[in-house]
Length: 478
Image (cartoon, rainbow, N blue to C red; front, side, top):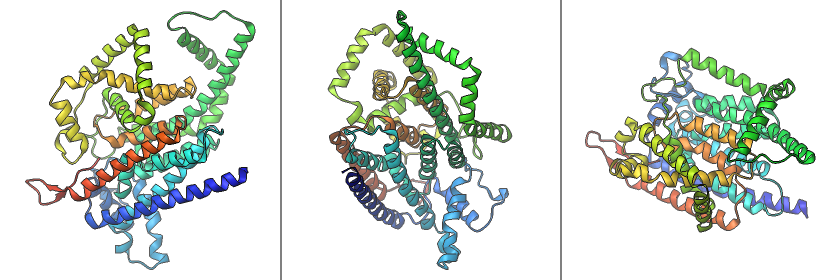
């Protein structure tokens, strides 16, 4: 019976992957017909990849507008160049815009498979977690609108996600050297991916801390020690435990032996930052780090919007309101701090105000810029979204949650530019780790994603416009 169910799940998975790839190929064809020239950031990425494809790797031929490392171009050359020898295709064909864009479509297939393997590994195996739920979850994340759109353009998103997910999977299987190596590949696609390599190390640390914490609780239970009371009693207990744990040389040496590949990668990153003079290469003036705390609030809202079947319900709102009333002083302080962060740490990047091809331009111009009070009125929504996200992760240990939110903070807050692309990786990691939702909610989520994707692609391909000072066709996109 078990073997039969596994075989059936394999059929379902193959059907889902095949159908998704078929639809993607049709969309890719539509994109290729509509976009025969590089668009948006492709005007930097595609010529650079073509120079690599022609064998020109000199630093003198590097486009200074490119801010990421050359991982995408090097891998693209490794994928498309063999076609010259195998099929006898000319270099003009092999290094064409269509062939280079197709690399990301191949990455999307790899991402689909990795998402499925991660759902099988991350989610506990029990009867309630059916094969349909795993496959629907995989399909839903694979067509997540912000991610899916960039499978058809020559951007770093698909490859960046592929190596990060692959690194996370190897970490969960205990292959930490391989995981760190894949983390390095992810770093070569986008420097901020170093945070997700550290996340993998944190995953190992959190697992060991959870095991030790459970042992500590069991010991106290057997000793029948009186519980410590007070508003921050749990926090104090955990802090005392962490201090005691970190004072043990045995514990530290064990963690070092488990995480040294990630620590080596982190050391290499530090060397890179010192030698490079910063995390960004190329156009640094437009990518300056700052403490943009509202980015965390924007991510919470983004996650609430795209995961609303799991995070938003009348019962959730009632539970939240009851908790607010019960701990009104705590929530009052949180609200005051949030309002202060919005007031003092809201930054508006020049690209956000200048580029009317992105949806964020219209969100900012027609809501936040027109009605400044909205920034503050949305604070309760941010708090609810943050609480709902934390509540959905309560099945994970407190140490895992701490590690995840530290990484989330590190990858979002320093970004000055509000761009939904930057939320893809933390969203996918979050979505992988919440308990598998019921099939009805997954179908609702998938249906909403399909509608958003349809509208996004329709607008991009058909609702074009032109700037007054340019003859180029412009399109709306994420």
